[in-house]
Amino acid sequence: MNSTNWIVDSYEEALAKNIVIVSLGLIINFINGMLLVTFFSNPMFSRDSRYILYIHLVINDMLMICISVTLYVLTYASYFVNASLCYTLVFLGTATFMVTPLNLAGMAIERFIAICKPLHHSQTCTPRRTHIFICLIWVIGAIPSLADILILLSAQPMSLFRSTVLCYTFSLFPSKQHKDRITASQVICMSLVWIILIYTYCRVLFTARKAVSKGSANKARSTMLLHGVQLLLCMLSYITPVMDMFVIPFFPVDRTKITFFNYLMTNIMPRLLSPLIYGVRDQKFLKQMKEYFTCKVIIVKIMPSKL
Image (tube, rainbow, N blue to C red):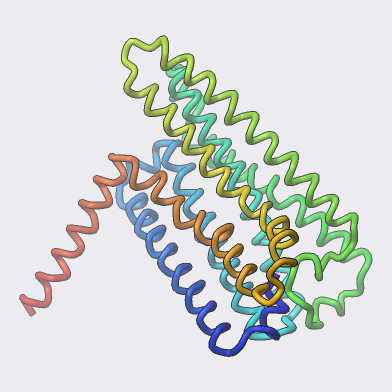
């Protein structure tokens, strides 16, 4: 997307865009880092499958932000990039993108079991099974990219990985078969996740209506809706090519500004909203985060005064 921006943008404009992207990436990872420290500061969270899945989503977002921002900066810093580095970044970026909706599906299933089958929750959603599920979704998320790499290795000489390339997915894999495989895998993945979300939400909705104590069921229903919102945010990236195709022809002079705005809204902003949607909303997690970091700030302030 941005390989041509490096040529068209002025130095000042390119610098401003990279500063914005890198700054937002650092802010998002700083917030996510606070959530990560909070999780590991209390053993209680590591014994709850709900928080294990949540913190995995946070770690996946951090990894995705690092890769996405690195690729964005690379397209401005160097027109051609070492092939091995580029393929590695694209492979990891594609895998983390696929893992996000699968993780959301797992979080929805966990809430469904907790509300609709509470007697089975402690036996079904154990930390060990949650970790196995996380490994499984990483395998599923990596399969499309791994297949592309294996096909590439069988068709191209090893010297390709010592060369330099345009670091953009459809420059690395220009064939129509690759585009069809990527589209098919993403459509299947998203369709499956939407089916899971809709089914679990409806079941939780019916349970909430029948429940004598509606508090936890209603809270779970709201959580399921937030899963849907997060999934919609993930799907914004599918809109980017459509927006580019329809908007850019009307404003060809502002092409790089439009692609920058699309990238910002579909790749960066959803990662900023993710910790706010879950971490800040969960009172137990928010309370622990406040206590932990307030304590750290007080210690830092007291220690210099004693010295």
